[in-house]
Length: 340
Ligand code: TXA
Ligand code: MG
Image 1: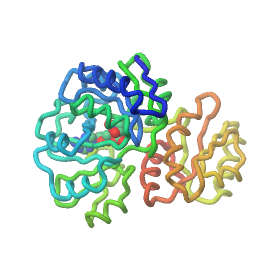
Image 2: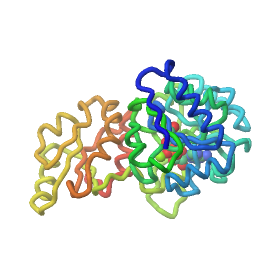
Image 3: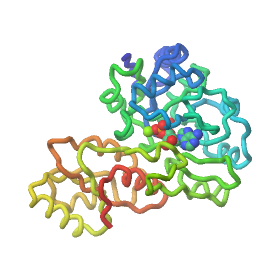
Image 4: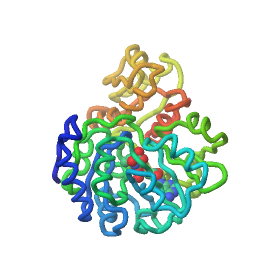
């Protein structure tokens, strides 16, 4: 795996980005930073190139990928039509952390859409991602650049840990911004449906287009979720995680019971809560009331607790509003138990 270090300056180092773009055009896989998480890219028009992504990640073949492009023009070249509400949302939020599910026109390879008639398309906001997409001048299929099932990567080192020697290149552009993935919104029907909460919030979307539906996470495993990826185990840390709603006293009580049972307990919580708790290890996610900071730190925290050091992770629940919806969506998937 070739690793290009961009440090801070995208312009000065664009030789590296040109090289990475050349890799993509030659059917190779390249991991790159976006404003949400690192993505693992390949030429979306090549079945062979896209197959390399599935192989490197160990990703189930029925989970479709997002096609990344630099411009609205490139985006509309991939879809059958652009419904009015999708276009309105795009004009407000793209480039940005939002993915539109639209009717596909078949330009991308079949394994990108996992055989669906729709395609997820997104224009990322990160300068490195945008410059890479412009240089490559092809649609780039890119899921998060992690081993399937693990937390998404928010640093190049996370990608390296998971995928070194399994991919052709890695563009290191420093830590990502939002820390959680893009919002996936299905715009094929009259009323848009949020399939995955993410960087652009329900509240922001409602303000622009009015009524929006939210796809309920499926509990019945025989149901077919609308975003196929949502049915798999995701974001899993190395130890079991209990998501706990309630007071500091309640959290401490649970921690004490488990420590008395001989388990080593790690805590993930807001700065204020973490400071008050006694446990074997503690990770502070950010100030209470600053959920954007919690989002940025979440995946790194999930990767920090190592099997062998910690037997159980206790994580504080957060309010399900604004970016808190995406935070809680990921935590519920990471959790083995939700204590209310
Ligand atoms: O922020 C992000 O979206 C990152 C960065 C790299 O852009 N990418 C990302 O990709 O999170 P991935 O593959 O980890 O998640 C894509 C999600 C999955 O849940 C997938 O099932 C859903 O989007 N998806 C993709 N295409 C779809 C489609 N045609 N219909 C419904 N869901 C789709
Ligand atoms: Mg992913």
